[in-house]
Amino acid sequence: MNYDPYYYPQMRQNQGMQGMQQMQIQNGGFLPVRSRQEAMNYPVAPGMSVTFKDESAPYIYTKTKGFNQFDEPVFDVYKLTKEEMPSVNAQKAHTDVFSGKTENVSQYALKSDFEALQKLVDTLQNDIRNLKKESEKDEPITSISAVSE
Image (cartoon, rainbow, N blue to C red; front, side):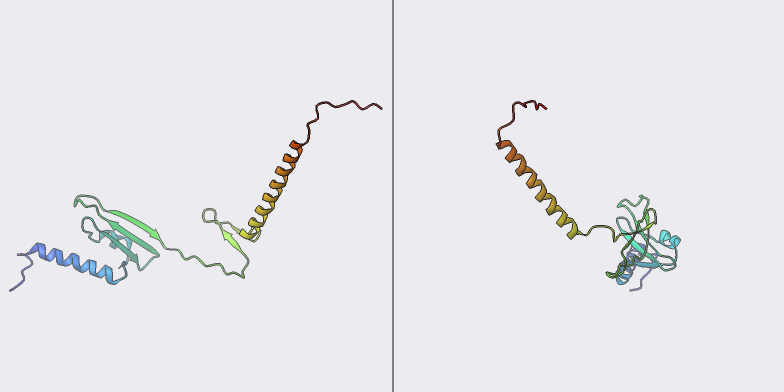
């Protein structure tokens, strides 16, 4: 039996979609593209989402189409950044993501320091409560006599 793509157009379209889905699975879930425009032009079936990895720039793109074939696709862009893992022996520094300022974080308390301080505060609070209870047990002074010189 000869296959005529003009006679069976729906079969040809389904085979193309299966090939695209297989390509995505084989590449670990990312389709390689050379530009944002190539990712935007990539056909996506209704109800599907495709993730792209730009090979020329540090970006990941997602293109999602609603279940209705007339819905406009949603195209999202994500920038990849590499974050260095701080070493234990290096001086501790923190770079604020929003301001870009770097500050020394060795001046901050560790969790163990905070827990020791919390125990000390709890002990002091208990001592104050005990002192208040003892003072309440004593008879209150009703009058103060004047001291003469």
